Image 1: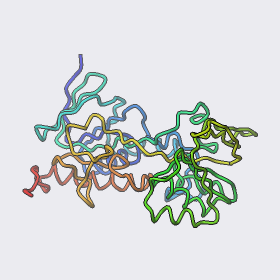
Image 2 (image 1 turned 30 degrees about the vertical axis):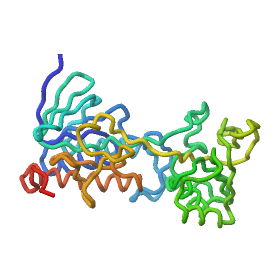
Image 3 (image 1 turned 90 degrees about the vertical axis):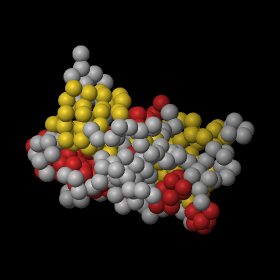
Image 4 (image 1 turned 45 degrees about the vertical axis):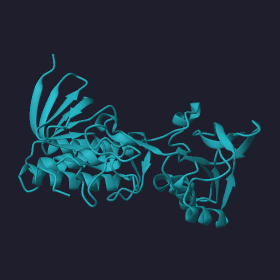
Length: 322
């Protein structure tokens, strides 16, 4: 039989945003409780070398960074619960009710949602196995490792085109692979892509397989299938970036707070405040643009500071009239 618990502040999610929110909230004597979810540490737990998080002269490992954040959050007074949220009730206002997979109910004056977003993958057998060995979903995270090499980007929207253009700063050549004969990206981005001398486009093609070899094993090429003729071909590359979108982890919040058309939590511009007073969102769950560990941590800080103000009565517990 599950138990009922009460807390001033409940944090849902254990990535850079959640842990940073917990650190700031604990230092403000809010005694926060953090529910980790299924993947404590978030996407950084499947990231190897991290070279763009401030404060480290050498590359660090993503899982190690998350371990350090978790330890710091606990050290300053956060209670970390390894459980997953299955339902929430934000409809009646504060206090809010959250139920976990373990059967417990948490009643909180304020809630910070930091459940993140997951990159959409192609679903190929070698895709997951070769993540960190030439397969990536983040050019700004991993492009640096492909200096002077040949890479491919899979996708046809704004993200794919932006990633391809960004990768030209590092890679020797970038091939954009799209399963149709036209791109969905904005025209100005397409113009920049087509004009770049280091970029080529392969139309009407889908990635059938990712090839690998060497010691240590790494990506060596792609098997492509023509979506019109069905013919297959090979493309030699050192890395492949999957850019077919992200899926924010917001299914349980759909009828509770405002989401945009793609499922991201809508926040008041420049703040972590959601459509429900007392509920705040931080990190990739509300960030469709940057999706970096350092920006997630920044919004986690903002959410904790606003939650402290809300609990202290400095932020109204009702939405202002339009």
